[in-house]
Length: 186
Image (cartoon, rainbow, N blue to C red):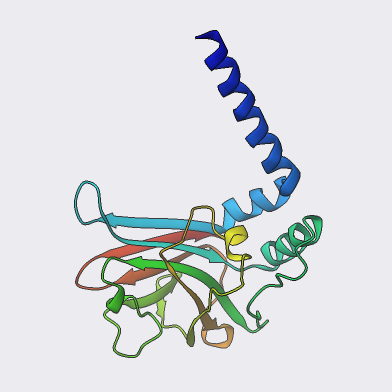
C-alpha cells in the first residue's frame, strides 16, 4: 500500500513539474484575467448544460498582460487572432448552446439578443464577429475554463455611441430560453 501511495505521489509531482516547465505562470496576467473575465450558465437538467457564456472585457491592461504572457512562454507564432480597435468597447465571448444550430450570435436572425447596459442605458453591438479557432491555441490563455465546445465571438460596441463607461457595466444575453447577465465594475 505504501508503494502505491509513493508512486501516485511521484506521478503527481511529475505532472505538476511538467506544467510549470511548459507554461511559466504569470500571476499578473491571472489577476488581470480574473478581474475582466465573467461567466454565467443555465442548466437544462441536473447534469447537462443548456447555455454557458464566458466573456472577457478586452481592456488595454489585459491585452498588454496577454502579450507579455505570450512572450514569456515563447508563443510568438500564436499572435492574438483578432485586432482591437481603440474606438470600440470590445468583449471576447465564448458561447455554448446545447442546440449548435442556434449558437449563432453573429446572425441577424439569431434567437439571442445581446445588450450592453451602461448607467441604465441599453446599447446594441455595432459588430459581432465569429472567430475561427483553427491554429489559435491562444484562446486557452484568454478563457479561465475549458471552452472546447463553445463558439468564440468578438462583440464590439462603438464608443462614440456610448455614455460614460465608468461605474457598472452589464453584458446581457437573452432569448426565450434563458437570460444570462455578466457584470463589471469599472
